[in-house]
Length: 320
Image (cartoon, rainbow, N blue to C red; front, side, top):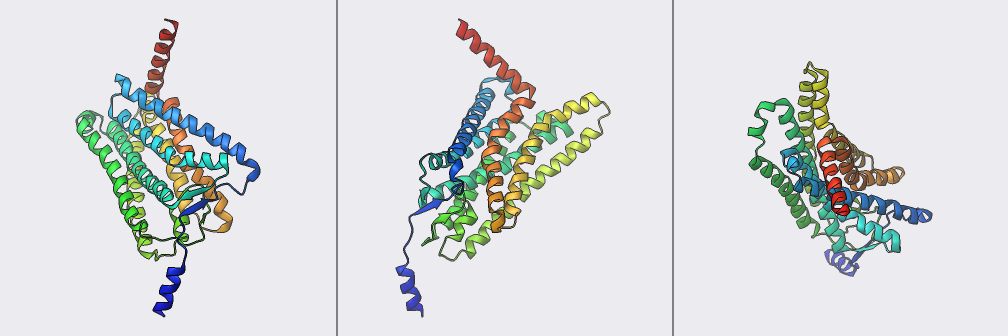
């Protein structure tokens, strides 16, 4: 029996590329989808690049909050580069194939960036907690060294998750079928196509998911419970509104990110919900990186003021 199993295993064809089905079930909307995603790509890249440039060049934005915001924009830029260019190419050319190694690279970058974002959002919520709940000690507690340590720790957490998952994923073999019913290389759709024993990597992914999502989420929620409780105790309505405005943008970003993320991964994996799963995946992989710079720039006086200065300088240089 073992010899027969070995012979069957040897006769299986190892596939070298996947087909990302994406939105192939909507052939009449391919051009429209391409234009929509192209606009999202341009707006996202422009918005996040602008935020990074403002944070680096404007002295008034050299504070912990904007240091974290600049890192978030950098992360979102990397995040969108992982997913959208490949999706745009497939919509434009109709070629939905992607090599197994390319698919692995996309998935591992996705794991790295989404894990880093979870921790970075938690760090930003902790920063707002110190600013509102412990304002007298804020400057001493949130110093440059701690800011750097928190950001580096967030990136290292994402990188370690990526490396460990990669070590186990590279041991998998794929021998058909090779169609992934998604627009990017996500974990579950890839795992379904493997002809290897996936019990170990399933366990590892469950452990990582149980640490890298709930822990930062609980820290974020705890920070905002303390923040809201502190704000409600402020007697002055004007001061209360000002205090809430300093964290409202981040709260909106957190709600959109975790809301769509939990919807995708907690929805039952049934055929009737596959289309809905893709829609919510678009939200947290594509729309959230676009919304972040818009939310922060539209709701933040300091960012708007820095942008206004840049526009005035540009106009002066043009007229000169």
